[in-house]
Image 1 (tube, rainbow, N blue to C red):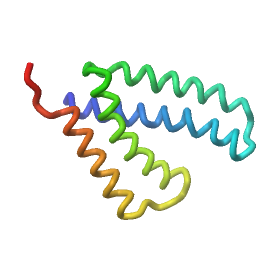
Image 2: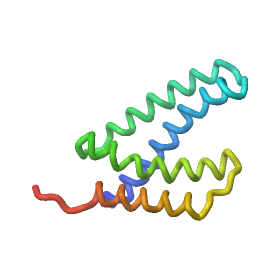
Image 3: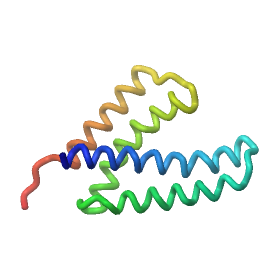
Length: 110
């Protein structure tokens, strides 16, 4: 159960981070409203708070989270940007997820 909660929290965290970065991108690159910076800031604050909810050491959490972020970013590429990931995108994202699992769930000495 710990593993599923950890992975779910990482996925929600990644979505918050991507939204927090995507909204300023829309303002800067697609001439959308500057008001998008308000929800972007809130989303990035949520991202930082969500990372703090993990019971592991911060460095381990940040390293493992990166693997989930890569996977969610590839899903974003497909779902939001409308670009179908290549086989290599999916292989790379899968390797990143395996790395996350090793970092977070490997047995450790007490």
